[in-house]
Amino acid sequence: MRHVREDMGRRDRVQWPSVVCAPMVTPPVSATGEPLCLLTVHAHPDDEASKGAPTVARYHEEGVRTVLVCCTGGEEGDLQNPALREPGQPFHGLTPEQEKALLAQVRPRELEESTSIIGFHAVHMLGYRDSGMAGSPANEHPDCFHMADIDEATGRLVALIRRERPQVILTYNDDQTGYPHPDHLRVHDISVLAFDRAGDPDWYPEAGEPWQPSKMYYTLWSRGRVEALHEALLAKWGESPFDENWRKRPSQDHRITTKLDVARWFWARTGSLRAHATQVDPTSKWWFGLDDDETARIYPWEDWILARSVAGAPSDTAGDGVLEDDLFAGLRAAHRVTTGGGQ
Ligand SMILES: [Zn+2]
Image (cartoon, rainbow, N blue to C red; front, top):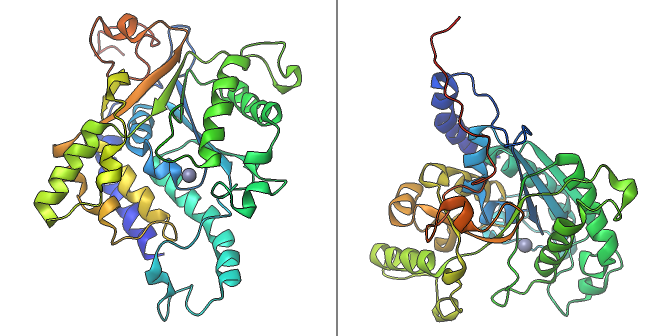
């Protein structure tokens, strides 16, 4: 619980000035007058912390509605923080079965803390069981995400898209050779299908009024980011957790369409990762080897690949040969000039 109070304190410190100083914020709207909404699809509790948390925090602060769809409950996750097994800690002296049972109780609370730190307006569980790693027995559990009928799973996501009406969806890459977890592959598969089906009245007629999202982006850890962090960690610690295997992964940087400046929002990543206290070792240099200010100086961006768009190519929304700097580029209502000072 110590982490919770620390993280909430940090969140208050960062967000309080913007609440006090900012004029009344009217939620931003699309060119068709709909409130802007960003929906992210993730596989397990803690994925929302490690992938794209600063991006979501940035849009939340702007007043964009932010929605998380978490496909599984993370039932197969192990305790990743060995300090919690020390005397006086909640996992001390437990059998592996008791550890699993306690994790099942704790992880929903961790997700709640994490998402409140990042600033999600809504969190929807898709309701599947964690499939575990490929080849493990959990992979064949009848309730697991991997075993679910693809049309049925897509239908659950379509129902949420029609209810939330997001213009922009964030999901996992079509190339996951670096970490082919069955649940992560599934997130990609149902997201692509749901993007195409949510606006089609012939699909899932019982699942609400059709709504066509405008854009879908894939997340990635860009080569540029990995190299920059690797060099900075080497300089600071004399060693780096990014080993040869990581650095040999094929670069996808040529696919990047969108580079978001998130320098002011790295606290969302750090705070939400710490909220997942059973899943993230607080001494890990992988996660915490650089502090937020150092990360912001070294690589202040999150990179995204525009994978689907009914709003045109990035060259239409950001200008020829230029990367987008906004996920809602090309979708926003034209800027209204206010005269100010009126009664
Ligand atoms: Zn995951």
